[in-house]
Image (cartoon, rainbow, N blue to C red):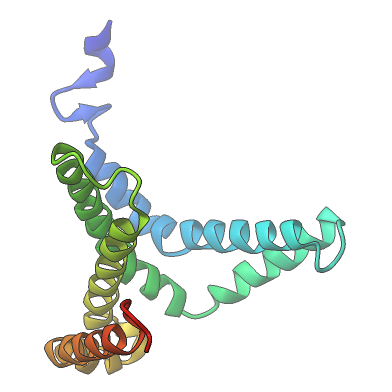
Length: 171
């Protein structure tokens, strides 16, 4: 019976790659998913803060308008298409860091370690996604190309911050 449904080419002749490519052609990744994310975030924020009251209809209408207006031009779609693949790689690096720190027997409750790892991953994701963003009109390419100089500036500022605000005796 399963032979009827599963052919050599995949499920009904389609592989998962074919399905995902078809969804991309239909605009699921460029419009539907960004809209759903924006709608859910705006609706959740309006519902949680109750800044406009607790009328769910009003909150849903505003979230719907916000989500549709955000997709009017391709800025949001381009931003999401640029940043989420790098964020996925950042999450993979974070998972590997969690596994390695767990194997070494540390990092379980020390939030400073996780904050540091998270900040480093965030900065790498940010600079990597700025490097290929057409939604900025090419402005991000120059910023990402200056990554080593920006990293050096951040390192110097970090050392200065440690010297000025670092622990020790305040005499």
